[in-house]
Image (cartoon, rainbow, N blue to C red):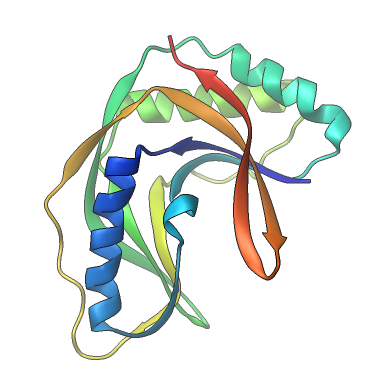
Length: 173
């Protein structure tokens, strides 16, 4: 099972992100854009996990004691790779978000679920393999979102389509 822990967005926030995507699509020469139901903010990529470890992951999630908090979605950026660009919407620095991610990563690692050892760079992937000509996307009006839960997600390809399925939800206090 290929798993990750994420913050999923409200439908209203996803619709705002789709409008941003549509703007990017208009100026892009090519790209593979995330489906609306797949838009999320990854907190921890777990990779291939044996189903017998699900109780450990759920226990780590349940140990998180943090109240709801706001994050601000702001700006467009990209990472380059050989196939084009990974285009993303940015997350304004949030001490609470970094604290949540750090606590989750530490708890998972201490429970034997080892994560990649690299700095956390929060972003919302809007498209992969995106190529631009001379026209680049412009920024958008920032908006806020209330983080009220963290979700354990299963990543799988069904009929050639990347799909994410909710396995477990931990509500923030």
